[in-house]
Length: 114
Length: 114
Image (tube, rainbow over all chains, first blue to last red; front, top):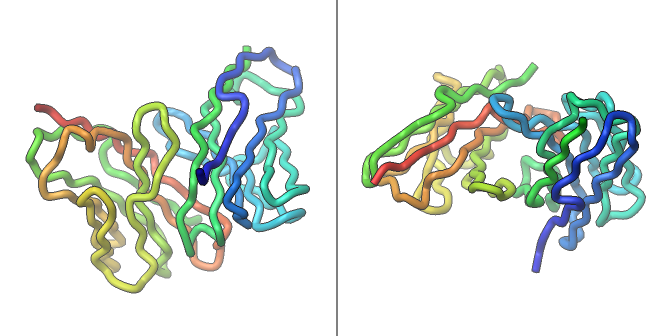
């Protein structure tokens, strides 16, 4: 089954404790992206990757890191999480850049930073 | 900077009534436009997309949207609402010449009353 898998789905952590949210897709997609969803703000793009070893900042990259060493994986790293990073995070992928095709989304990772 | 605005964070309709969800974009050059839907506790899925081939775009589940350049709008409609249409709907835009970016609106929550 074609899917985007995120882990963990739920996480409660404390300020400053490094964490990684993994994202994996099994569709051989070149493009992957991370978004955060906050009430009243919609989804905001954090980082995106057009292909392996190619990453670019989205609109809200501060406090986050990403890497794209393999085509299927695109982990999101919070080196020193802060409470303002409490949010619902989505990973997405597509065969080409978004304007040429459909974005497939994972089910989301709800992160709480205390 | 390119942006997209959804008018109305909550819309409530009766079952069988017309659904109209509004979206306006800011751009001097027509961008690529999308509508995504998010059902409770799920990721987003594509409803329809406009890529300049036709101004009236038909999507899944009976939804359609019309691109109006003169009004910089891309409103989503469905002639007859069904209870299963209750969800949050997001308008999104890929700015011209920035294919890696996908900018979402704030979202509109649609409620359908029996």
